[in-house]
Length: 81
Image 1: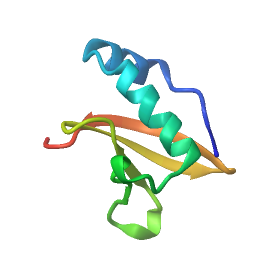
Image 2: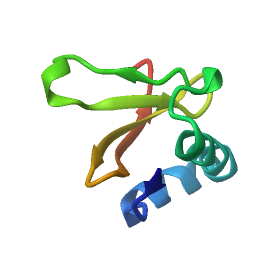
Image 3: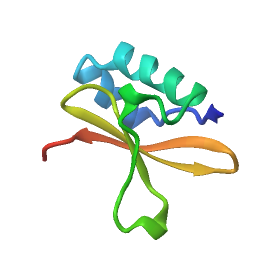
Image 4: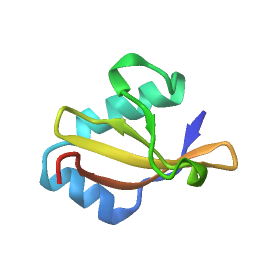
């Protein structure tokens, strides 16, 4: 599965927190296997909206949707906020 280009605001968020390399590694994993164990991929509530998240590291998660067969990251945030 392919992923859409990351929005500029999300790129800045990653850069500010020095998460670029970790994010790219996890993005490659999810493109190859969305159920890879290190991603901890999960569907968020309410489930009917079909919004998912995957782990970037222990603190940060990427929120995404699948549209037209592509992964679109819509947010990146601190998992514990």
